[in-house]
Image 1 (spheres, rainbow, N blue to C red):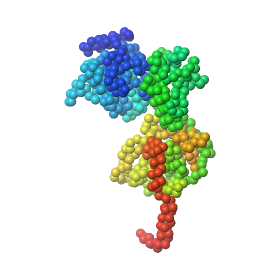
Image 2: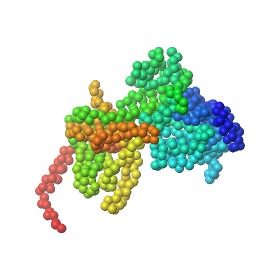
Image 3: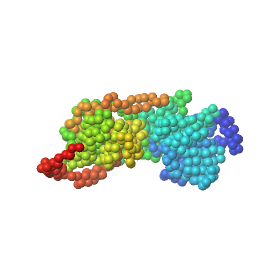
Image 4: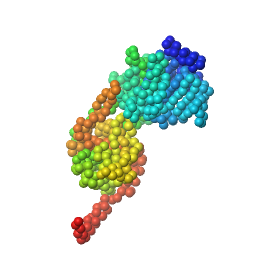
Length: 640
């Protein structure tokens, strides 16, 4: 036991008039007291043997431990949130102190209290008798976001609440899903740094404790950075054949050893190859192996904190066949593969930032022309990028699996500062344009995005008068939603404010750019396949070199921000058609196309073809109108 910390613990206990702290490990306390609130073992005592890799992590947070900081980079279904509850229960019953729990948002914090913390307190006798009950109009009782007990309290808040992160002083801090926290909170800085500042009063005596964990996002994110700053511990398990310990990995080593092996078809029959003896390790061996495992640090250097990696390969809640099935369902879709990487393997996703060669894309143009919708195209979106001297636009047809075809693109020349200028009328003509499919049907545009980053008032006015149009604004960040909730904005033209305003839709462009480049690298159908891979991009013969140069004009570049390296998108030249495609992808997401399965696409195809207007009827109607206009005497225009 650290003598200095023990001394301060005793003084603190005496000052509070309570008994000295009991010497018990949090994992032991949890196994003897804590009742699981939900899941398959709800209502039973927490059993560490179900997650044997967790006790060491939570035991670092004992009051007499010399460790202050513990970080966890994890996949889903590994029990991390449960050890947070074990620690909170230990704090209440054994080592009372002011403690803060920070979730990504206050709404998530409320959910955590309602679904996990409060039910745990009610079901666990040692906690129920110590945590004060919630009493209406009582300043001494607990609330949904504040649990009070003798000698301390637990405050629940969100990383989006600057008030709590700046006003509280706490000894203990538990931060969950830190990857989803904002980088900068209302211009006041990183919420993680703000949380650290809440514990500064306890730095000198060294009694502060901090547990941080999250599923990772992209390479270099918070959880990945903290893991690499620590001693990088992995769970090693013994081979049932040779007894050698090893870390389980999804992919084999460079020499072909190790790795999860499985059939491409159900039931997959997944097994693991020992990297020492080459023996076949069946899933039936997994539970015994995992329970006999131990943590091994890969970077043992002074000053590094304990940092842990947990993934589903070692989880007793997930089978190896489950992992194989999820990978096979995700491998052809960049966004799904990223989620598999993060949520199942607990690994950060490293975006490929190099742009595909524009000449290769130019060389694989296909024989369809502008204005035609190739077989498979069912939904039409359009996007426009506003510049001072004109407007770039692109129209895209979408089909099953988000396969896409560029069916129109161009530059409308004209001064955009004048909302009544010709160029805005030309854009209106694009909005009204119809596109012909192979069966002679005409389809209009289903959603039209216009970038409001330049000439905003003109964009707001143009889109608010067209029900299928959306004013959009691109936002940076790897965790910004692809399409967010719109906000109301004022519209002012020629010094007067227009009634009703307009709505501005935020678009998370960074993720869309990565998905676009992953799709551009894909090869079309081959080996007799009936369909192209999901997300495959088709380009017609009318597109020129400039289009492809702009489409591939951005790349990822590393930049250091406050001691942390982040990867951000930068442009190497004009990127207007790149932006148009990104906003087209946002409109596809807005319409929910990414959530449609093959059966839903088939139903949509039947519905679209049943209600589409035959092109020959439109052509005949236009001819009648033209003939009538030619034969009618024109009225003389009155002169002013």
